[in-house]
Figure (cartoon, rainbow, N blue to C red):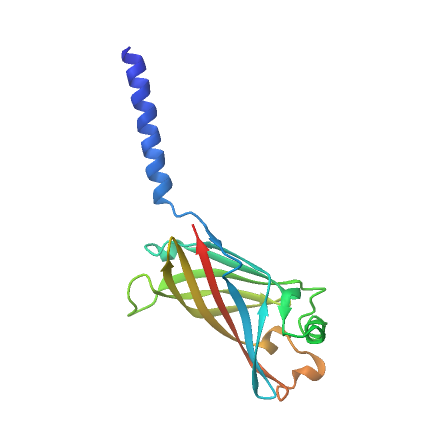
Length: 193
């Protein structure tokens, strides 16, 4: 009887400890593809254009109480780039632009996420990481806004880049008079636990 009571106490105690450990560790968040967006904003002949990437995956493991332990990565399907017209969509997949046949994905992997100075706790962060487009990798930094959204979180940010640094626009398309070198990658990622 004492053995049985001790065994039951040990099992109950182990379950309690395991449940405390599992609630203390942040679980990766799931991106809601239907509510999330990634787009590129640029100027063509000095007219702003916004095009969306229709397919991407975001892996986010984030706890606002411990941003230094956060992990985030995004894979973007280049062939999903949508300028709103089939002919243009086909053109940007060619070698001179994204060269989607050879480089089907663009990726971002965060190397650090830190609370932004002066921002209310849990709302703004400074993110650094590596962005790879068309086989070229560059160190990038951008501000990130985070807000609670029901049981999930929303992550919003803008990342300015220079397209020519990634060889996007080769040959005659290196001329920035037609398509500006400055591009802003905008994202809105809605997650659930």
